[in-house]
Image (cartoon, rainbow, N blue to C red; front, side, top):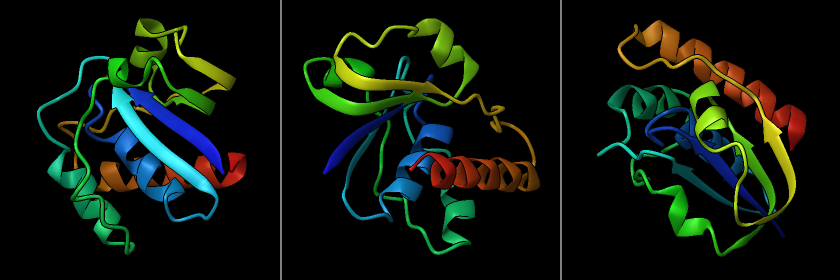
Amino acid sequence: MKKVLFICTGNSCRSQMAEGFLKQKENYDVYSAGTKPASEVQPNAIKVMQEIGIDISDQYPKSVEKFLKENFDYVVTVCDQANETCPVFLGKTKHRLHTGFEDPYGKSIDFYRKIRDEIKERVEEVF
C-alpha cells in the first residue's frame, strides 16, 4: 500500500478533493493537510464532490505538522501558496510532486467544478 499526503495552504478545498479522489482507488493510504489549516472544508468543495458521488463531508482540515514524523511514498502540493510555504516536507518521503491549481475560494460553483475536474484528471494521471 502506498501512502500519500496532499498539501495545500488551508486544507479546505483542493487538497481535500484530491484526497477524496485518491481514496476511491485501492492500495492507497491517503491524507491531506495544510500549512495554515482553515476551520472547515469549504461547503462548495463538498457539494461538487457529492455531485459526482464522492462524499468528503467527514473530512476536516489538519496541520501538516501532524504528519512530519510519518513516512510517505508521495507528498503532493496542490497550490502555489503551499509550494512556497512548504517547499521541503520535513518528514520522509520517496517522491515530491507539485501541481498548482487555482484557489476556487470565493468563486462560483462552476469554478469549483472546473478545479474539481482538473484535480481528478491529475490524480488519475499520476496515480
